[in-house]
Length: 72
Image 1 (cartoon, helix red, strand yellow):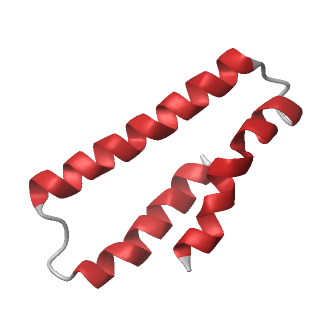
Image 2 (cartoon, helix red, strand yellow; image 1 turned 60 degrees about the vertical axis):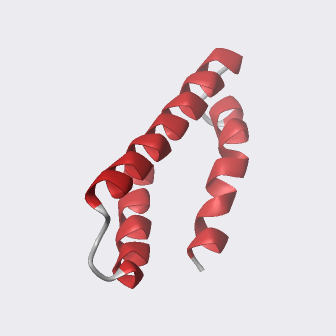
Image 3 (tube, one colour; image 1 turned 120 degrees about the vertical axis):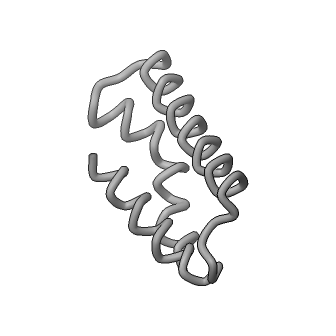
């Protein structure tokens, strides 16, 4: 379910940067780089700490965190 909700965010992000924010290719590159760095940092944090005790709790937590970051 979370993939269905948040996958269009990554796919339509270049269009949003171009049309809504009047950005160019450099702005899109910065946004995509920061998005990738955020995913890398979260993967490292989960890998180093072992994540939550019950993995099923990580799905709603990650969806909530992604939603908050998207709003910011």
